[in-house]
Image (cartoon, rainbow, N blue to C red; front, side, top):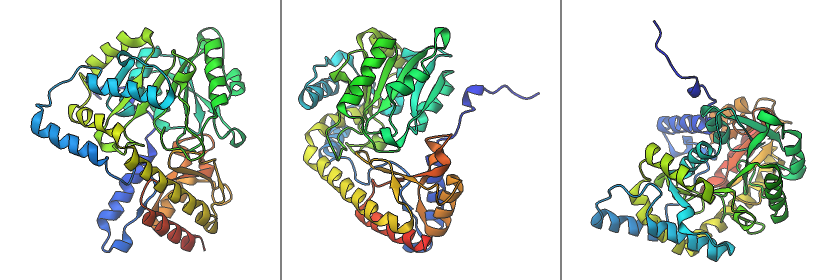
Length: 390
């Protein structure tokens, strides 16, 4: 007799992780450096954590016993994040509303569990970060894709939301927004974010604002949803701007009505976030000179690819206002972005992510390139792609 297995695990893969596995396998089989692939698939900074963070981690290893912390995180880090909002955004947030999490992934899990019941509908832009959709489905929630258009920078609009608002038990319960966004790099203007916040308030929809790419902005400073409402759940992370992906540390700012719910969930699901990264991360906020130098490099990488990729036939991109991605329209090159990316890896040695990871409906016509790596990698990727497409 077959053993029982859960339907909750029957969700779509996170395709970028499959691409990374295939690229890593190619690297292991490479006999020369020239046979190794160029990694443009994963949104991971090519730089280490700031020196001050690494120094703080060494001190903690020597001096701290690294036991459990409070479920919501260590008080010094929560206080420092509260200060960040005051200094960066002019917003007062008490440390009691700040929750330290195991990466932004832990924050999304806690957010969805605290805010929504099984069966409820949560809207998100297509294209968008695939784990939103997949975590929602694993929890028995219903993701509602908003087919965002290029003219709106692939961001949600009140008009799209009105079309899918529903009524009664079918009414939207939540909206996830991201600015800067993955995979497009596009940003909501201050006015557009304010309009979405107002729409959510009018319609009783819980807003979750993904702000993990704040700090990596090329056109204007990013706006936090906390400037307009205290009812939103705001998620941020040390992975992107702070260059600490493998440290697995993030945070969320929660509305007062969810404070105890989130704490109890965190106690039971995680006990506490990892202690060493918390102790080290306090120093990250003093490393802005080093971190802003990373952002300047991302800008150079972006500009290099925008100048060179058209020579390889990649000519139309979403507006890359922030983050470190180019979302390329490849409809004139293929109607199967997954096969196209497999060929790109096998024939050109360049790893990129098919758009189907981010948009199940229209993603076959798109490819995402990450420019978070070194300038040398961007130059080499452009050279290989131009040669491949000739």
